[in-house]
Length: 304
Ligand code: ADP
Ligand code: ZN
Image 1 (cartoon, rainbow, N blue to C red):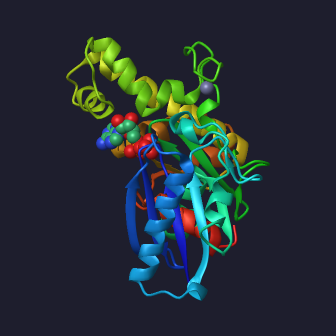
Image 2: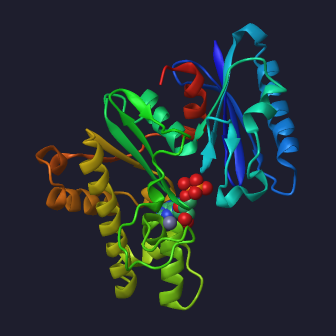
């Protein structure tokens, strides 16, 4: 038995054949071409998936299902993409129905952070945990919430959209209409934006962290310490809300590594209210490249 895992992203779509134990048997990827109608993209994605099935000489009966992870907001009840900012042409698109035209097996849609959380549970950093929160700090910020041995997905699949949790009402206008949202202050995008403003030239997120953490620029150092503190604020709120055993942080910004994890752990130690919260470990995600498609496949391979 295998499942097809599909991770639809703003720039690329990863497609894989995944075994029940989370092993990726074959994978490929396509650029997410926003100039193409989403129905044509789905035809291309399905075509690529069928080629993988053909190469592995699988029989139709071997295919257990198709799992799809996609950026939120979406509506899993209706099987639709709702209005993700970086997937504008897909707004309102019935993605599950579109894939049903290609595959006669169960098709499940969840948001990408939720799927990645499931992958971290299955084969990653949260294998032993019955209660954890996976936080992705990348272009935006999102979370997958796993509690009492199950994913918390919410009524429409949008639980864990913590990027729009307010961490500082004085933190500037977020495109969502609120002020001081977590991702407006602490995402990779936010770091690049603020660092570029400070230096008066375009600065990438990685360069900003490198300059700050090597002590080459005091203003950037302050910026980065502030961002770490806000990531701590976000984690403390998650700890106080869900009482997890563990927080797993993934996404591009998590590659900053120990300076980030040490600062966030320190903030949690000093500020989480409940005694268990003070000790809640914060660990890096174990899966990087393939988390999205392993998680997507896990949506149909495991009982979540
Ligand atoms: P996506 O948001 O498309 O899922 P990623 O998880 O790779 O992609 O996150 C991209 C963000 O992470 C960008 O803001 C990027 O600048 C930042 N980033 C990527 N690598 C690093 C790194 N080594 N250090 C700091 N930031 C990084
Ligand atoms: Zn917001």
